[in-house]
Figure 1 (cartoon, rainbow, N blue to C red):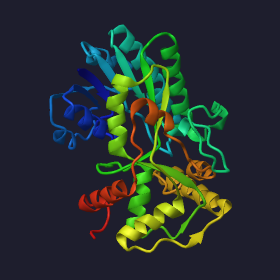
Figure 2: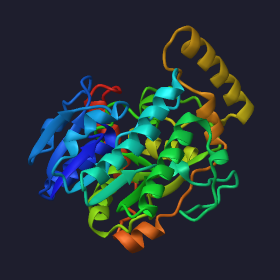
Figure 3: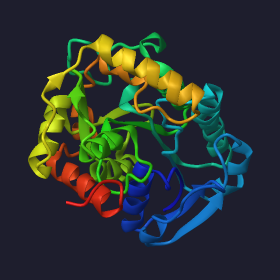
Figure 4: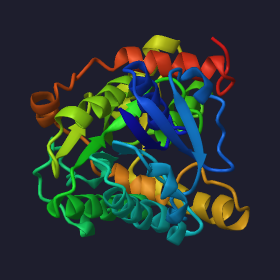
Length: 333
């Protein structure tokens, strides 16, 4: 099968590319002129690179020619951004145009990688699923809003008859988190002993390799217009830090900070580091506001319909730690 894949230079996209290549797919990978392609050499198989940008959708038209499927993983994933319009252009308008071009090119199947961020999470920590009620008003920050709106584009395309499957990974972890992602930065900060305290929040961590396998399966078994949460273990932030402490010997923080303290710190970080110095702040109000809800989710639908495997997350955590250490993101053991 010939597949057009976006986002291969990113964390999840790299693992999806490697999984598809291992299954014999012929890949056409979208890269930007500024993309760092150093990891792509290890994918193997037959992979062709083409230059384009979601913010300039017309650059994608020729790249989809003669492809049987599209796997759209690329997204602008940042929790702090100077120009929010750029995020909406890439995540929403880019997805809308990509789906339109896939229809025009006669692409048979499309897998769209959304995010668990589009789900209806609650402050009481209730485990949610794909049917938990949610609206745009529940979305905190530009990243969540842009992903929610992009997902609506995918659902509308499916309603018109396009074979579009939507995957909603929770919080992937593992090797090759080169940016790193916001979750990867939690690990890196911990390894640098920059975690003096923690908030009462929670995440669902999932092995990125399992997420990648689900993308390959969804191409064959996914039901158009269906959303599938791809998750692993529901853990509080304190439990995550304790697991990191157990595998590294670095002490886990024991001080829990209240919401208002975290919000105050994030406000000054955004103001001084972000707006005045023009650098990415270490904490943002968006992150703190998101942290008020425990992002606990169920992957039962993906298990039943895609054969998705909910795996223990400890090996993926260890792989992440070892990769960050081996690649200079954190001090050696």
